[in-house]
Length: 132
Ligand code: THU
Image (cartoon, rainbow, N blue to C red; front, side):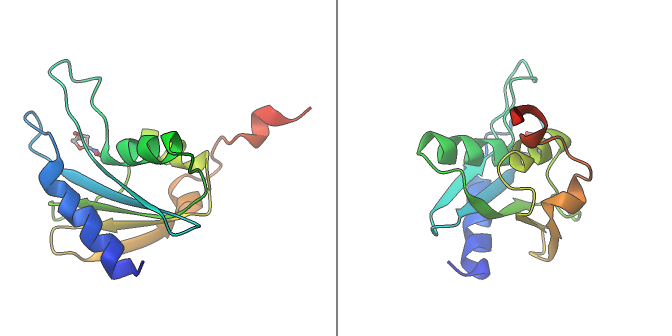
């Protein structure tokens, strides 16, 4: 899939967002090394803390379908700021590939493309725990 197609998919997910509290829709499209793509939107909750970010929904869909080899993710918002992943989502993504490209979009469709390692320097990864 081209980057433009991936961006369109992430933007299309904005309409699926369930955001009655923040009114801040986020859409995500997560691409795997074999070309499979998993989408997500944010899902809010009256109790607030159960809220799921769009990126975490996409990761959950991918992992539950047997995909963990992620190469890039597009995160779309409708704000003038680039919709960069929150800290929790950075950590979740880091688990699978610190070198994945994170492409954040603003309302104009402009993009900020940054490797995850730059968004989460000195991140805590599986290597820290899996050593014998
Ligand atoms: N949100 C995401 O979906 N992804 C992010 O990385 C940033 C925040 C959502 C959570 C909440 O539904 C809304 O944006 C406002 O914080």
